[in-house]
Amino acid sequence: MAFGLKKVSDMTTVDPHISSRKDDHVRLANQFYGSAPADAHAEIDGMQFVHNALPETSVADVDLSSSFAGLHLKRPYFINAMTGGTERANDINRRLARVAQATGSPLALGSMSIAVKNPSTRQAYAQLREDFPDVQFIANLGAEHTRESAQMVVDLIGASALQIHLNAAQEIVMPEGEKDFRGWQHTIETCVHELKVPVIVKEVGFGISHETAQNLIKMGVSTIDVAGSGGTNFIQIENARNSEHHYDYLENWGMSTIRSLMETVYARTNAHMSSDALRIIASGGVRHPLDIMKYVALGADAVGLSAAFLHSITSSEDADEAVESTIALMHQWDEQCAQIMAMLAVTRVEQLQTTALYTLPLSLRDYLSQRFSM
Image (cartoon, rainbow, N blue to C red; front, side):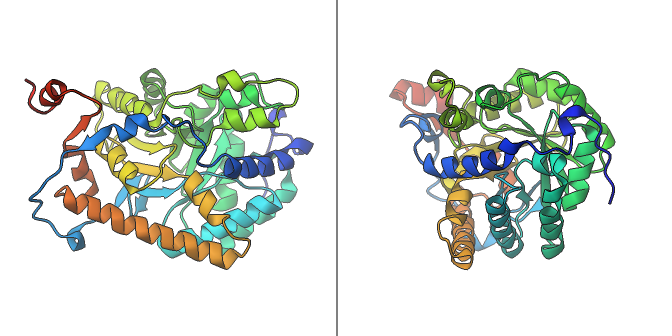
C-alpha cells in the first residue's frame, strides 16, 4: 500500500518526542484519574430524573442500541480514543480491541499522527486490523494533517469512520506543541466531502460551544463529539510535562460536558436539523451508567468513554485479567443502563429524551416552576 505524504508537518521523519509523549500521556492520565476538582461534576449531578413509581416496563424489554456516523452500537456508549503508536500504547490498543470484539463495541483509536510521521509504526496498526477483523475501528487524526494523511490512516486500520480531533488548548501547553491553527477548517471540510467514511469532529476535553457547532454544521459535519471538561485534562497533563513554562492557571480551562452538550443541541435545533442529520456524542468525565443516561436524556445520541476504560484495561500487568475485568465492567454497565431505563418507563434509548429532568439546587418555588411552569 503506497501513501503520498506531501505536507511539511506530515514528513516521515519521526519527532523524537512523539513516542515518549504518548507514553507520558497514558502514565499521567492514569495518575490523574479521579483527581478532578470536587465540583467538576456538580452540574451533571444537579440534573435529576423525575421518579416514575409506576413504570409498567420490564428490564428484559429494554433495547440499548444506538448509532452514529454509520456505526451500529449495541449500547448507548462506546470505547473512545486513548492512545497508540508506541509499544506500550499498542499493547493497550490490543487489549481494548479484545474487549471491543467480545462486546461488539466500536473502538476509537488515539491519535494516529505517529503513523503518518513514522512508517515503521504502521505495521502494528495493520496487524491490529488483521487480528480483529470484526471490530468497528474509528481512525483518529488532528486537524493539522492533510486529507491524504487522513485517507492513509483510515486505510491503514480499515476504519469505519474517522475522528478529527481539535486540541488547540492542549497544543498551547504542550512543550513541543503546534502554535499555528490555520487551515483546520479547510482540512475538516475537505475530509467531510472527499473521504468515503463518515467524519466525526471531536474535542479532546475542553468542550464545544454552539458557535463552533454552527461552524462545523456549515462545513457539512454530521457527527460532533463535544468532549467537555471533567475527565482527562490535557492541560494538566501537558503542564506536568512542561519543565520550561507553568500553566497551572489554565487547568480549569474549558466548558463542561453538560454545557457543551446543551450548546451543541441548541445549535442543532437552531439549524432546524433532526438528530438523524446531526448526531451528537457526549464524552468527558463519564463515571457511571447514570451519567450516560443523563447525557442521552439531554440530547446525546451516544456517550464516549476513555479514562474509565483506560484505568480498567491497565489495572493489571496480566493482559487476560485486565481484558476480562473490562468486559465484565461493560456487561455490568449494560445491565445497569437497562435497569435505569426500565425505572424511567422507557424501552428504547431515544425515548430517554422524553423523560423529565429538573435542576438542583433549587427552592420549592423553583422546583414547581420547572415542573409545572408556575
